[in-house]
Image (cartoon, rainbow, N blue to C red; front, side, top):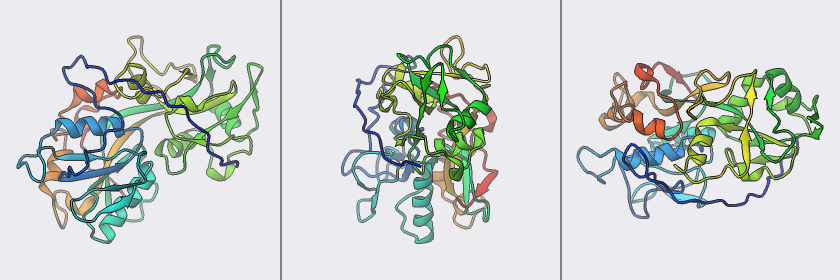
Length: 334
């Protein structure tokens, strides 16, 4: 597979005031330099923006070391981040897998540098139950193409067609030569999408034209480009809630199902729907060896601080989970 990365064009818009009465943070908003918070999270690009907003909204009960409880560091930005006032300078994890690996490293080496990982996929290794995937919202993944391409002609692909596109058995559509793209290695969206269309990493065809940062529509710069895209991210980007990276892309249907409802919200019945998670060390939950009251109150249970932010979660394009939010039953190692 050709793994060259595509250059991206920057398209930045100001954050807009939201109808629910709070201001959306800039999508690049790591905590300010020198600002350190109790719970540190890294990983998924898909949930980085809602992670930033939750960080701005949820207060630390004791105000130590900061008035805000959650520090969520973006998937992209500076090469390194510092998560604690002393030490804890680490390479910035880009994507779900990188975030989970960084959390595992922090746990195995008792560094205290990271408390949770943002993930847009479930566990792929259940050898142990060292980590717990706690769901907090619903997303779905479809494919995006350029609006000015002939591909955008009531685009409606089946799972079989998508499998054929990414194994290069199908190389044209609507008379256009296809140039399929995938998110960067370590992306939870990449893992999820390939699983849903039934393609392993080894089966990806040589026509797949490179890797791009996930949910960045500006990277689709030729008529044949097609790439998986988080529907929640697309809604937030086009709605002015976060930095707009959608470029001129539009979303396609899968198996005849539209990605959005008539009112523009996420269609949670879309075929490729998924929960998104905050991954935490199992030992730090209730009943674990080293329970962490702050982490439990933030993420565990349907009345947790995060799950109580349902309106905020919806504003960022996601669906809510109701009483399933905050469940602590899904466990694994990676």
